[in-house]
Length: 305
Image (cartoon, rainbow, N blue to C red; front, side):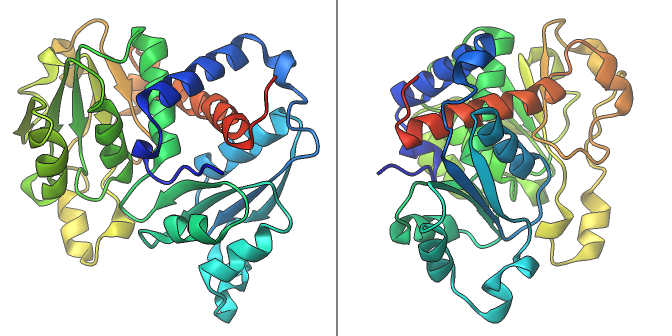
């Protein structure tokens, strides 16, 4: 039984196969419309979510399956003191696959060790968000036609941003990619990413503090919000939250085929005026998330269509 807890749980070949399957689903939706008939997905969200939870639920419904679960810890037996392990053991009796989000890093990994069905990490603290990474990879592949030989700028909260950490791990296994890390010094990417990913694998990267100095060199810019929920000091959050705002003025020097990605939700780090620009990919990116989660669940459930 296979789980998805970290992006590196999948080989590059497995990632490419999931993306290929997602592309086939996009082109042949009717073919897959009842492929999970009789299957149940449990969404165990101990932390609030809109896009990720609804994307998983829509994905299973479009495959002909059913959904059960909860959308916050307050509506689960966690409020009574039940452990994550006991929760997943019980839910394994009712569902065929589990998607789990938890504020504590490592909770989905623990769940995968105890569950009797496949577990998908739908985000654990500031650690990993592998299905967002698959979404990002599918979006890049659809927009650029490739997953190699480009320069990507990662902008905003690179310290706590689990989507950034997961994407770096995944893209580092493809060739010819240069990373440009754009953040204030307080929100720099964690040191373990520098040492264990970039330096260990001899991957080209640079760290800068403004997007203006690099925007003209980027093929992709991946914007992120400064996450209030990751801060212990509200004054520090208020000081940093508007550090980077992408607007049409900043895009004047960008490439005509720049791809603008954002895992969402957006606060104000991308001005709404950018939404009409053809380079804005983030709403297409959200739609891609549904298709790639359909492909992932089919793969983990071993369903062949």
